Image (cartoon, rainbow, N blue to C red; front, side, top):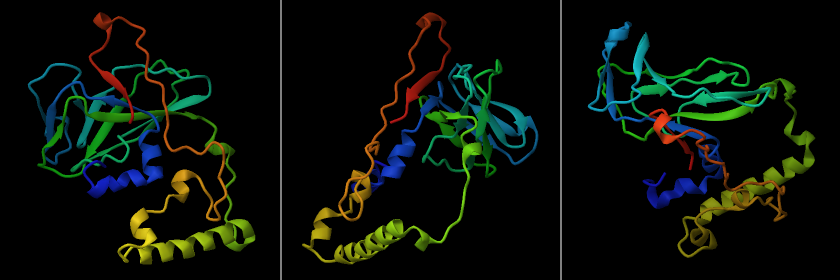
Length: 233
């Protein structure tokens, strides 16, 4: 996001909130892994000069496996979503996602990545996130009753959307005119600020950032596993 022209990705509030929606588990070592396209565990070569909790080739089939290094515990009825780092693509390899019932399970889980291209070295830096976690109410999705309705059936939403769409088209046209208000503003901030198209304020719980609490270390450094858990920025 920092490398994009004028860091314009930071204007996208959904992107920012998603990036901060959880915590990251980071690699304790630098390493490079290469898959030769075969199906056995020996078809992935891992090279590193470091020592620590290393990734493995437990499953074969071009799957690189990370041991997370912790056993997570959540409140009753709360599971843990484990997935790859959000909005952080990596060439030639794809993270796999899993949901774990961490409120009761005494079993650890692994974070797995599937190679998508053979003979392409994939490098992870020390401190680079390989797993993104966040809690989720186990029955939350089952409580949802989805429906499809005609847009016009909700007159307020339909009219607000129409108003926004017309204003958006005008704004995008005006962006091309040097010295215009749109050119000075560079982007419309209504959603970012939590305002409706008519200028009315949105909900009180609108968020422009998340302030997650960091993990508190309750064990001595001497006995801690060789792994770091960072709050997602």
